[in-house]
Image (tube, rainbow, N blue to C red; front, side, top):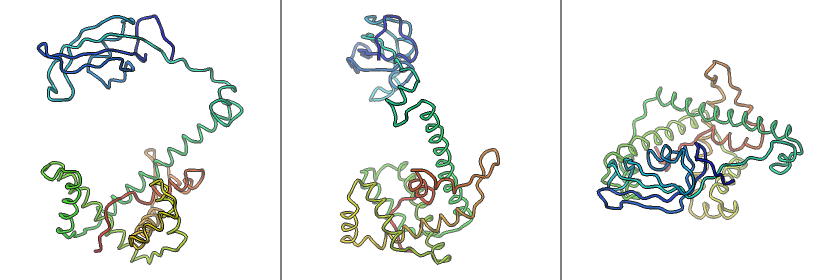
Length: 290
């Protein structure tokens, strides 16, 4: 960041002091806060107020408060522009590539970035394909849920959040819980119908992946789930993932232009394991026996 003497423009980085009052009463004030002009993550009208002014100048304007007890009310805002800086980027050359990456040339770095971007798009396509296949199966299948289990799950969720009296949130949790349970029952039926089996290697791979997500040593994590009797639940989850992956392999996936997407390409590169896991399933809810 380099300080500038000119008037502030969109994209500049500033340090400001700001206070907001309503009828002479100070509602809020901050000093020395950093703000990027154009980000729009503070008060409405702040960007317009800062643009065109230099360091040391004070600007007054009126803005509707976005939060707090006075949300929606107009406040008199006074902002002092303490400093204005712009981002100075280095030259894109081989020297930059060597400093910013493991590559020796800018051409190699750019090629790697293109490859990463392409892989990211394929990764996202895989996630969308998984979701659409699952949505389609749920729409084609009627699953009667045990209402007592749904109510129990919803109540437990709301109690943990201390929001048992929030009717709007209860409706949201009820909807997500029903979807998660239907997904579990549907995948369990596919496991049984297609005789999906889970071998030891697949279970170990899943345990290692889950341990990594929790930031735990795989051996310690395995011992912990064994002591808690969670191994059968792990086996069930791996079976559900395999069942959904098998269905996804049989689906024809096309992009918005109608081109067929080869999900097998997701197996290439360092993101393969993560992508495959995401493609299989991301439904999370405590497992229930049907």
